[in-house]
Amino acid sequence: MTCERQKPTLVLMAGLPGAGKTTLALALGSELRWLVLDKDMYKSLFATMSMIDALASAMAYELLFDVAQDILMRQNMSAIFDSSALHPFVLDHALAITRRADAQLKVILCSVDYEERSSRLSRRTVAPSLPYSEVRSTEDERRLFSHLPAHTLTLQTTRPLEECVASALSYINQ
Image: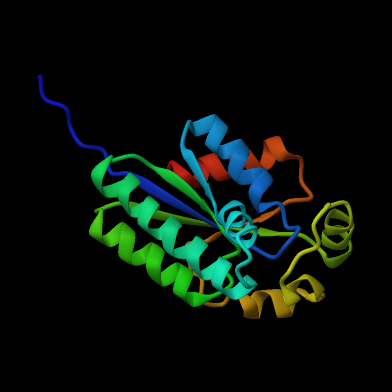
């Protein structure tokens, strides 16, 4: 019996703090039974070791890039990379990983208006450390994410979670 190798997929989440990335990533991970690699979780862990914020963030990214590459290349499995993807280097690493792994890259940009983001962030126990939490206009948000590929799926996460999951699944399975 031969088993045909399916191409693994890396889903790169993108969006401002409070846009619903983690909520959607966890729902997709549960639905697809894929690992969710949460950059903020690792950053928080490194921060508890008295690391400065920038170093904790850099170490979290490096660790997750290595883990994502292992999951896609060695384990031939798919994963969801939960990060803001605000910086082009995140996309560059994701592209390099998927190229080396002969995998697909799907990018999902979560978007929500300033008032809703502010409301969501005010309910968090930990304040966001990024200055981007103050981005107010759609144009500013578009500029921040202009490095994302043309095939990026943009989701308005004020829609019900079930609708966002259904749209994301349809995009991932294309």
